[in-house]
Length: 288
Image (cartoon, rainbow, N blue to C red; front, side):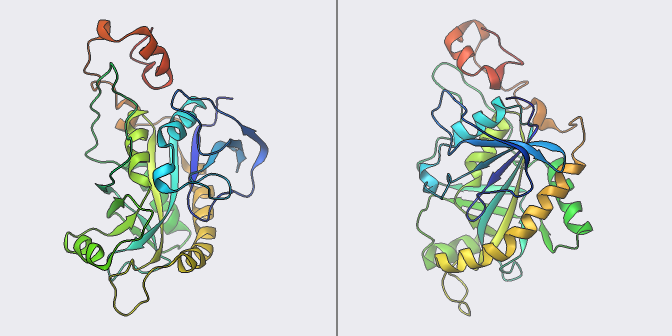
């Protein structure tokens, strides 16, 4: 069912979006396997949206078990052009406090077991990833936060670790020395795949804790994460509902044409089977 232009990916503690009308659960087949769950489509504030709980319904999937390719491919197949991604994170900075909301503009990859590309096996593509977050979409979300008088940190670097363990104290202090701002386990593969799919992507990061570096606070545990998420998730939902109302009809950012000069393999060497498999992603540039 195409036409859900805005995608919402819910993270830890956010596996539902209230207020959806015309709600329908859709099972979306992808060449990369099954997404985390059925995609829930409907209207939110009168806008067609597609909602996907990142960890599956009931939080079944470890970060390393999430089929990121299937998730992003499924949203692309449904017509999604923009993704608002909600994520629980730890803070690596004294002045980014638990219950803050952060809109990072950079990522640093410390994962080990993630597949973060749709390509290979007969097609080579190198997309520009210098600015991983869509600046236009992030600006919309930031302005909404300001209008709603919700305290927000605009910008920062999200370091993405493999998980599922939280950091050791030595690791946490190491990340701080390198100047990273927040730490999480999921958003980097999403951002890379969204860029390859020419989808605008913005992280709404909900700070739950100080990781384990801060001597004046207890080390992070799952009870703390969920308690702070509960308090912060309502703000995230309000931000999403107001942000989707401000998304323009036409995108003017470079995300929409990320593949334009990125497909390196010569057209006649790319098999029809590869072209068919990736048609929702590369269809504007290559036909079987």
